[in-house]
Picture 1 (cartoon, rainbow, N blue to C red):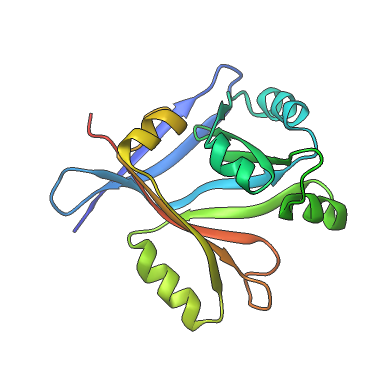
Picture 2 (cartoon, one colour):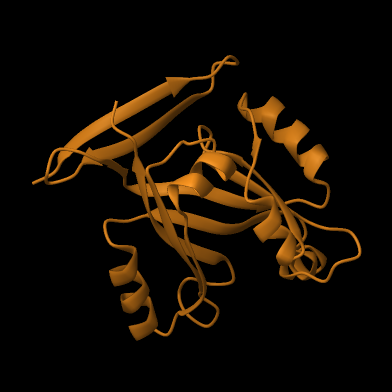
Length: 180
């Protein structure tokens, strides 16, 4: 049985974030469970950064810029605050641009940390949820794009339209933290 470990952090402006992680069966890797982050669509990535940094007392870092640009978006992450910002790249056609036009700024996705992302993907498919993209980062990609924060970063992007998941994207992933 895995051990439960609660990890808490306080930010400079008094915002307190709690992340629940657990040690794997072999006693080595620490893996997060529950909500990893929410994905917020914003029209202007820098204005969004400024707003959420002030609101949450957090700091954002760029993510996989090259990969995101292929989908017509810019991204910023604040894993400490559990938030990802996505904004359309001007002049590019993107899902986020269409979503902003239809619904305005706000939550467009939730990323769940699970024990087995492939099992969650299979269960989702049985329930009528389609998977439209998978990320499986190498350690060099994690070091470059995610500030070396993880020892494993693997996630499936799922579309829940027509299911109880609703119109938001749901991502399921395995997020392991390095020991120490």
